[in-house]
Amino acid sequence: MLSYNKSKNLCVRFVMPDARSVCSDENFKFSNYTTYRLGGGARRAYFPRNFAEARAAFDIAKQDGVTHFVLANGSNVLASDSDYGGDVICTRRLSAIVRVDEEHIFCLSGTGVGTILRYCVAHGLGGLEYLAGIPASIGGIVYMNGGAAGRYICSNVKSVRIYNGTDVVLSAADCQFAYKHSTMQDMDCIILGILLAVVREDRRETEQKISRVLQLRKNLPAGKSCGCVFKNPEGISAGKLVEQCGLSGIGSGRVFVSPAHCNFIINNGGSAIEVKELIDIVKRTVFLKTSIMLEEEVVCVGDF
Ligand SMILES: Cc1cc2nc3c(=O)[nH]c(=O)nc-3n(C[C@H](O)[C@H](O)[C@H](O)COP(=O)(O)OP(=O)(O)OC[C@H]3O[C@@H](n4cnc5c(N)ncnc54)[C@H](O)[C@@H]3O)c2cc1C
Image 1 (cartoon, rainbow, N blue to C red):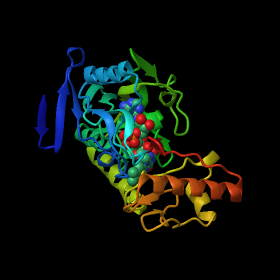
Image 2 (cartoon, rainbow, N blue to C red; image 1 turned 135 degrees about the vertical axis):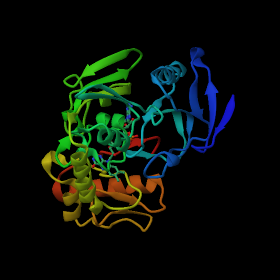
Image 3 (cartoon, rainbow, N blue to C red; image 1 turned 45 degrees about the vertical axis):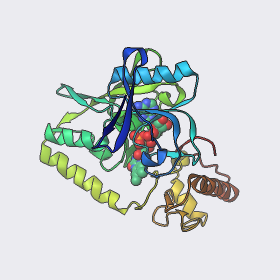
Image 4 (cartoon, rainbow, N blue to C red; image 1 turned 60 degrees about the vertical axis):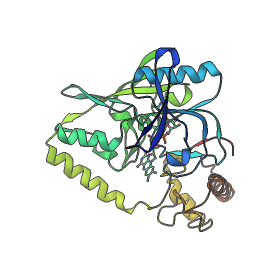
């Protein structure tokens, strides 16, 4: 059955796996769903709206024996220009927030950071303001253990509900959070939802904190990017290292290292392979000059 979703400008198809219907996008392209605005199509792309559909999409991909990729807000993804041979499970419609008690909220994994912060302001809750301005879903942030200004989401996570064929609830300790790492990165799973600790806070105070964080982020480079491309090696700023190696601004007019923040590679009308080639040049040069091998924070998907 085909139907057109005008508000989302999507042509959607409803399939019936095991009597459950999962919404899919026949015209899916990574370039429409990543902040780099790059990447080709996929074999199939599912947009589950609830846990049952998320489990079904995961199971279908496994049954078919094809590779699959969980895509959230695509703000840390570099997808290849050629089509991806597997299935994509996109979580951006898996979005809702439940107030569990005075100090906890439960968020479906695709819920956007901005949506969560607006909810917190409306309900007099604080503790997550440091996430303001990160163009991510909460599932993506938890998977990456993302954060800003020295705070990481692990400090708010109480538990994470995942599906890997069965539902499993991981405690924060089970998640083995470390710098830009969670145990979910080592598992074949989809994060369904996260229980977060929050605090009661006057809404004006929350708003002011959010404004201050957004003000500080104004200096980040504009343009299509994935934020920081590289992890900071052992407390050293990867951006400073890239700059000290004389790589500020290198590249072409189409794809270049941002002079404003050398850990950002900006796409200005280029291709995914050009971004990947520039990443490799930066890594090689930094290694030759410092013996430090930078490690990508950005997640590459598809063939490069
Ligand atoms: C302008 C800009 C600024 C940024 N600033 C920051 C910053 O200040 N701090 C920071 O930490 N990051 C920052 N980032 C990077 C990015 O926002 C984070 O890495 C974020 O965690 C990615 O979340 P996402 O929802 O976009 O996930 P995606 O980019 O879609 O996915 C990232 C990874 O998480 C996996 N994943 C996502 N959701 C799930 C799920 N439900 N189940 C299983 N796996 C999942 C994906 O498979 C992928 O491997 C920035 C990016 C941009 C473009």
